[in-house]
Amino acid sequence: MGRDPRRDLLAGLTVAIVALPLALGFGVSSGLGAEAGLATAVVAGALAAVFGGSELQVSGPTGAMTVVLVPIVARYGPGGVLTVGLLAGVLLIALAAARAGRYMRYVPAPVVEGFTLGIACVIGLQQVPNALGVAKPEGDKVLVVTWRAVEEFVRQPNWTAVGLALAVAVLMLAGARKWPGIPFSIVAVVAATVAAQAFHLDAAEPIGDLPAGLPVPSLAFLDPAALGSLLAPAVAVAALAALESLLSASVADGMTVGQRHDPDRELFGQGLANLAAPLFGGVPATGAIARTAVNVRTGAGSRLAALTHAAVLAVIVFAAAPLVSRIPLAALAGVLLATAVRMVEVGSLRAMARATRSDAVVLVLTAVATLALDLVYAVIIGLAVAGALALRAVARQTRMEQVSFAAHLPGEDRAEEHALLAEHIVAYRIDGPLFFAGAHRFLLELSEVADVRVMILRMSRVMTIDATGALVLKDAVEKLNRRGIVVLTSGLRPGQRRVLDSVGALELLRREGREYATTPEAIAGARAHLQRTGVLPVPVPADASATATTEESAR
Image 1 (cartoon, one colour):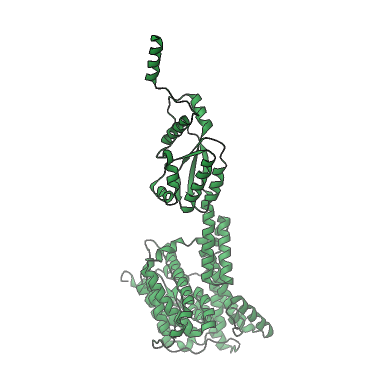
Image 2 (cartoon, rainbow, N blue to C red):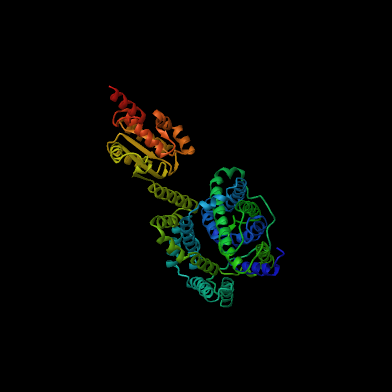
């Protein structure tokens, strides 16, 4: 933190200016109030900055977490949300101890893009009641709440709130495009607040009174009897916090040179942050992609920037609470509407949709599930569908093709014998994985082999084989044996032998020496079998032929 403190302090101040309206807005959207958003940004932001695994990560309340918290507030109340945050912190620390951070790399890009698109839609819809200037209707489904808010607005229109929300959103989007270095979120909020006060816009409802400082840490919200019922929501919150924090840290790595976060330490830092934030009335926190990006772009080089962001917000909490309390809710709704719009990377979505049909399906399905269900289910569904499509693609790479074995025959063999061998021996090379997703197709192809005496399976290019693939291979060998076709194998590796041996297939292939190390050895074994069965003539040794000629001459 001592390398370039001036640059880090300036970056932290800039991030705090950007984060203030977002913290207020996400606190209001969560249902716990603006003060909960500020408390989270200060407490969780400071602890995650110190103990997290990224030098540049900025943590606090986020829109994704708000989406999860709304139904929890509706069902369990504010105390339930604080308890869920505490439990989620414990779970995140447990994930860090289990070194689970490395598994983030297995989340496919279409799932992340669909997840982000769905979150942006949900955040935008959540702002509709405040943007329309109506009381938030009852319900925990964002589509239902939005529809009820529109119905209420039609009965009693509030054009003042609509005008403020749209003005803030347009100013943020247009200003950021022309002058990206200016924090237009705070400029727009200040302008909207001044206008509401100057013109006495009674229809623009303000945030309301905020406490001048952070509350004394307390566990009064904790209800031990409710811990069992809150465990499932806590798992969802912890999963989302881990996913979004590690994704945000990865984004920060990609925007810099030489920065690499420690995923397990990041989980530990987020766990501590979520343990502490509820004690001060804060909501669960995660790494914030937008604020982290601002931090990197403004030149942050160490944790000092994120700490400065938390300290500046703490000063605002203690010194400027009366001013902050006058900000219209419609203005905060405009900030979050603009944030939702900026979350959608049209170019990235277009590229992902054009990549493959499977990627487009996963992206759309994850986004729709995020909007219709909840974020954790959306990620699970996206991962499941992406995994199924990936398995299907890998299974299609498994090929079995007939190959010529003439190159492996000794050079002194006659052409007639080559032709005779080809009439009775067929060789197939198996390429790719032989596992459950494609094994049955392999059995079908193998069972349709024409009537020959010996089949050689070249296994050296089989990348992997599981129990299903081994059982299917065993079934195919047994069916071919019943048809009188002897199956020989070549090129089996130790790992393949272990799987085949576990299901009894290796014993079947070892009968009469039917398992060989190389293809030439397998061809020699096939020839010996054909000679034993009388299909091929037994060659007469050269010395035996000479002896027979001498005896004939003597007679």
